[in-house]
Amino acid sequence: MADSPNCDLKSLSPLQLFERVTEQGEKVRALKAGKAPKDEIDAAVRMLLSLKLSYKTATGQDYQAGLPPKDLVLISNGTTKEEDEDLVDPWNVQTSNAKGVDYDKLIVRFGSSKIDTDLINRIERAIGQKPHHFLRRGIFFSHRDMDQVLDAYENKKPFYLYTGRGPSSQAMHVGHLIPFMFTKWLQEVFDVPLVIQLTDDEKYLWKDMTIEKAYEYAKENAKDIIACGFDVNKTFIFSDLDYLGYKNIVKIQKHVTFNQVKGIFGFTDSDCIGKISFPAIQAAPSFSSSFPQIFNGKENIQCLIPCAIDQDPYFRMTRDVAPRIGQPKPALLHSVFFPALQGAQTKMSASDPNSSIFLTDTAKQIKTKINKHAFSGGRDTIEEHRKYGGNCDVDVSIMYLTFFLEDDDRLEQLKQAYTSGELLTGELKKVLIETMQPLVAAHQERRKQVTDEIVKQFMTPRKLAFEF
Image (cartoon, rainbow, N blue to C red; front, side, top):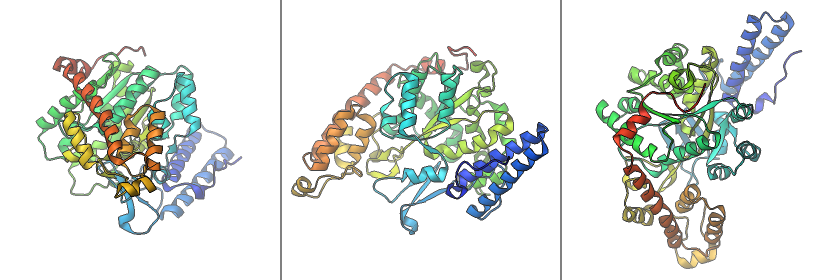
């Protein structure tokens, strides 16, 4: 009997259609390789042709294996004007909407799945404790195959975590802490190995800096990452300039063409070949065989990647390549973007000191930055604010407190008081200042304890405290 689509094909995004065609193609090849009955193969081929036709109808182009729809994402905010669209790729995030990127539309465009209440409840049952507030508040909002990771965990099968940092500057800002805070929690509740990639090679290729400076930034950033509290016995941090799983990189490179990386990442003929080959380097840690010293050479260990959703194009490419080189597809958890002090239109920037609260800022600098630069959703006058209340959807202080204030009840009280006009903008900023100052100060104290020797321990290839 012919397979029937799981849902109306017309409701699928171009990327979802692409993934369906890819999966069906793999099924056809498997059936042929296994010498399945002719009627079963014919039914699978008919389904493949139907999916390819739907893809062409949706995109206006023929399906090409390994070449998904272009990942330079433009998401309409309800208008047809170019300036009112969201731009999301691994290097740029722009939106004209003061509320920030429309993440529901981004999920549809990227073809990922929303982290819903059912998944959060399942995570809670699996770990036996309350999920992280990043999950409860929708800061991590999208996923790929998290259900499969939970299946593995519940069946006592291993998995590992992989995340990273592009060391573009010596000092990190508080937004950079988000994936590491969440990854640390995941590591603790699931008790799994973690690998952290420092892409100093990427920064050398993309930025105007020497290779020595890129490597220096990697070492300095490693100190901030270690200061988040990771366990040296369960965590391997590596610089691409120091350590690479080259066997997997070569395999990935063989299965991705120049046309494919141009389509996925927007590279041009004038880009250096280092940029063109870099996606394979970011993909390689998704496979456990890149770390034989940790996984004892095993190639079938599931990988879970917590990251901001602008990094997803790298791993959609990885997921496409994985079955063709005999590796499991990595699973992902996507976070929203951390807003600049000036508002949610862009990510925070390490190159603009006033857009960010840096981990090196003093208490006075934090207070000045928040009071002077944090975008307010309040009214123009006290009288108007008391009458009409503030707008929590655009207020940066509320946004930051959603990330860093762990008390759910306190956060809800502040939102209600601000919306009603009872709480003024200055009073709300005072709450944020009192939240951020001790958080940054505590991080600075922990970082002081991270010596060069400790960095060396984390960055030395070695067996971790797990048996495989």
